[in-house]
Every structure is written in structure tokens, then in C-alpha cells.
Length: 376
Image (cartoon, rainbow, N blue to C red; front, side):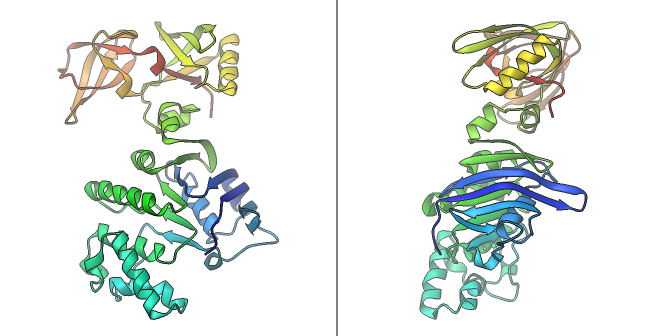
């Protein structure tokens, strides 16, 4: 199958009657990238994947492989089997009456590849997914993780130019998910196969991806590296989805702009907080929005990750709360407490704290993110 340098999606729309599932979806995927569509159920992740594969007809927009149009909803629409893509589904979709070898070889036999080449390619594919000794077994004799590996082998044996994975690990237990996540990562490192992966699991997306696309109601909210999505969400939806639980409503009292960073003085339910953000991390559009909020006395919402709140009197915004709940998580505890001003604080700390005791915490100045309250 011909290689490609870029998959380009322009102004993609998908409607079902009055329901708009995808809206103005624009994305470029480079050769060899592992790109994850991330978001809650119903945000359009799988629909976008199926539009790219050709399994769902698009309502509007264009999809290109380099300069070749593969779908524009009007003039050109290359059928799924001619796009040269491989797809792995959530439910494995294996033939129960066929052996592992026959399941993996099925597509090659349909294409009438000679038997010698089929054996070589099937053996190579099973080796890649560590199932060398399972060729004669049947799907019913395999664990869920092994069945998923067979589904992946069946896909990669066809040498697709783009691999599409629709929540392939969602049916596995927690231990198997982590094991298969590792296997997928290693497989991608070996093959450098351009991949689009769909999941609602933040940890999967962070662990596997070169690039993450966060979606809400069919609209892309942010595209970035795992580090950018994890540490610098561009809006409150992304921050909330990525675990920034401490969302407190307040106002900006003062803004001090410096060459490398901007300092914000916040009043949150009578509590004074200092927030410092590097100008390189805060794009011009977000800085403009926050300046507008400040000038017009509008409300903001903080977003602070529980893991970023430090126990004790470290440097930063110092707080004291009464511990109302403590959940033991092994290496740390999840703490929920109430501040003197009534705000609820969520923190994760290695410190052992008891219910009802007063605890001191500190929020580093650069770990507070702020967004306009009404931002959608």
C-alpha cells in the first residue's frame, strides 16, 4: 500500500437529521504519528474515526491523503476497502470458528495472496503481538487480551497505511489494559505506523500519544502533546476533563504583566490567591479574554489539580482546611477538606491525615489556572 506524508481533514461535518455530531472538524495527521481522539461518551470520537475510515458517509468537508482527495461528500468518495486503512474494533470481531492463524490470514486470502507469502506475513504479525505459539488455537480458548492481540495482528498483517483503533482496550480489566497499553506502545515504536486511537481514558491518551485531540459535542477543544494537554489546558472543559477538580468562582483583583510572566491577584470567596503564568504558556487569545474579564468585572473560575496541592507550609498560597474525607490510595491519600471560607479543597498527598483534623496546604503560584466563568 502506498505510503503517505499527511492525512488532512478540512471542515468536516456529520449530521444525523437535526443532530450535528461533528462540526467544523479540522486536523492534520503526520506520517508515523500516534494521534488520540479523547473525550467523554457522545462527543463524536468514534464518528470522526468512522468518517475517516469511510464506514460513515460525511455530510460536508474534505479528507485528503497528501494531494489525493478520498472523500468530499460530493465528487469523490473512495470506498473503505480501497483506502488502505486498517481498523481494530472494541469487540474484537473475530471469527469464532476459525483458528488464530486463519483469522489473521483471512484478509490476505480474500486478496488471493500466495500461500507462502501468507504464512510469512501471518507468522511475522503473530510474532509482533507475542502470539507465536497460538496459531492453532481458537478465539474461545484465548483471554480477552489475547483476542485483542489477534485482532491487531489481523489488521497489521494487511500492511495498512493508517491504523484506526476504536476503544480497543475498553473490554479488558485494569491489569490487562495496562499490559496491552504497553504492547501497543512498543508495537508503534517498532512499526512507526500512522495511528488514530479513540478513548475516553485520560491515562491511555497520555501514555500512548504523540498528539491528543480533545473533543466536546463534536467540536475540537484542544490539540496538543500529552504534556500540553495535561499541564496547560486551553479552556475550562479540557481542564475539568483532565482532572483539575478545584474549580472556585471568583474575580481578578489585579493583573501585573511582566516580560516572561503575568501575575494575577484573585479574590475567591473572600480568599486572596496569587496566580503566575508564563506568557509562553498563555496564548494571546486567552490573555485577551482574561484582560476583558478583569476590565469588565466578570467572574473567573480557578482550575487546580489535586496532585499540585502540597501538604505543609511550602512556598505558595497557604491554606488551612478541616479534613472531611480521606481515601487511602496506596502511595497517597485523596483528601477532601473545607476551608474557613466554605470552599471545598481536593488534594492528593502522601501525608497521613485523620478526619476532623486541621491540615495545612500550599498551592504553588504557577499551578493555578484561571478561565472566564461563562466560557463554553
